Image (cartoon, rainbow, N blue to C red; front, side, top):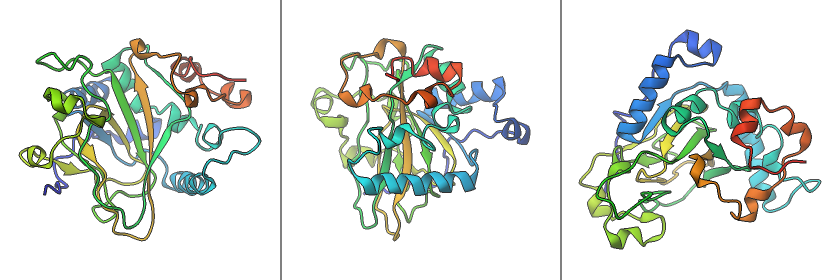
Length: 271
């Protein structure tokens, strides 16, 4: 069974000045876009404040403990700290995504959270999104991207996600295309290199949703939380999507968003 390695993670190395300004240079954006196109993902390590990330992690656990309950009729993920610009308008992820998917990307709210409980088992290998035209003998440019933000340090012990770089370019046969999440067989995946996304809390991962990946077993005593925000090229807009995408953003939150953020979430209902 493939368990991956912790080397050769496609990381974008940024300068201290970029960190101070929370703004990647055009050279960094170009380098990140190239990594994303070639490997299917790019990681920018430790770009969000650790003390604030810990607050978000505690808030996330509280939301998960609530289950389906809501307070005052508002979805808890549509309130602070989850609507902070550092998450939904991330200054590193946004320019990278626009470089590869165009300026008119969009997303829905609320976003999700991947949470792995202690004692969890290994997940099946899968894609979150298949090829746009799966019958073609080649892969088209990326059209769906997920931005992940780990709320705790990701380690081998707590089940850091295993990823197969370059798998976004693989064309599946017809049988695989028709399975949920385009599941990949263990034997096939074992023939290709993989690694686990070992990284500090507060890092940002920009990943092509066609990449093979899976959650690994959590052998610690605490939950492993990672935020997951999905972004689309313009042609993916689906006004009849599931009702979760019709959740209304409180007006006081909406008006505090930047014009750029309002443009990205322009299809979202708000009061």
